[in-house]
Image 1: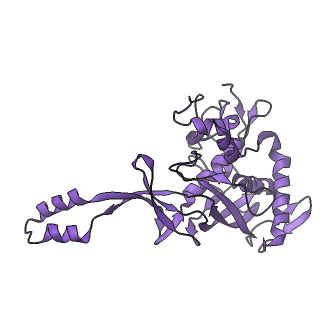
Image 2: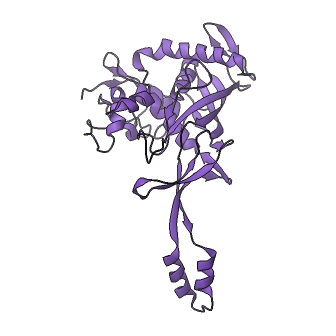
Image 3: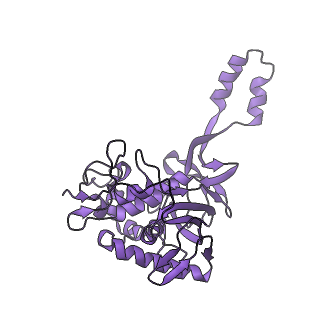
Amino acid sequence: MSSVEVIKNPPRRRDVYEGLTGTIRASIIAESFLFVGSGRRSIGISEENVRRVLSGKRNFRQAAVELSQRIKLEHDEFSVSGGRAVVPGSSVKGNVRSRIELSIVPSAGKVISCLVRASRVSSEPGRGTQGWRHWRIWREGIEAQRGPPCDMTRGQTVCKVCDLFGSAGLISLIHFSDFQMGDGGLEPLSLDHGIKLMSARPGSVFNGSIAFMNLSPDELGLLLFGMGIRNSAEGLTILFGKLKYRKEFSGRQFGRGKFKVERIELSDVSKPLVTDGGELIAPGRSVSGPELNGVLRALRKAMLDSFSNYLVEIMEVERLHGIS
């Protein structure tokens, strides 16, 4: 694996408003079963069993032991906040950031992303081993050695992606809310190998927002690229959540979804959004509906004008289905 130079610069200021500042209102649409876990597992025990164990018992320690023996571990729980199913903002951010990083490739021996630890693979994994599908889908962005990831606790410069999304010792310029389930629902699934999941059904919709600060038009376009947005408000199908790298599992498909941009808003303190086509959004205003597609196309053009030498368009779902 060849080595490349990561282009790094001092991060921009976080204490003043110097660029585009606002919010993307968006949704995630599940195109298959979708599971994002809470790390917890539900348990099951019947009321009849509880009554039988506790009936006439005075030794509560013994009763507790008997109850624990009758409890069954049920399904891995879907992430929940405030009583509603959510895709946590941290999961959304990780998905978007990884897609950008893994789509960035070297040009003339240089690259604009250090590639954070979570996405690094030291060598090509053998078929059937950990990470082998990940490698085959994203290999262009993984192959080159980039040195240590950015760390502002040890240095004074960062790559483009770390400046946007943060790194050790550096706060992010982009913040993701939890995406709460609106339409749809959860369904308990019992799968092969004893896997039990409480999964979002296909067609479920999760609504949330992405706040950004001090971005340039090409950087806002790069953020949208990471969401799978191209020239319209509804993005490409992307891989997301548990079992996303399986073509099918227990006769079902998992981990397919897409982002849909509902609206882009600029804060009163923002600079206007200006591209080659003129002013697209003024401070304190928003754009949605048919006009939104024109803004998205202009942001994509700005992004490609700046970063096309470093970006490769990877159709991740198609690549996954092409893996033999």
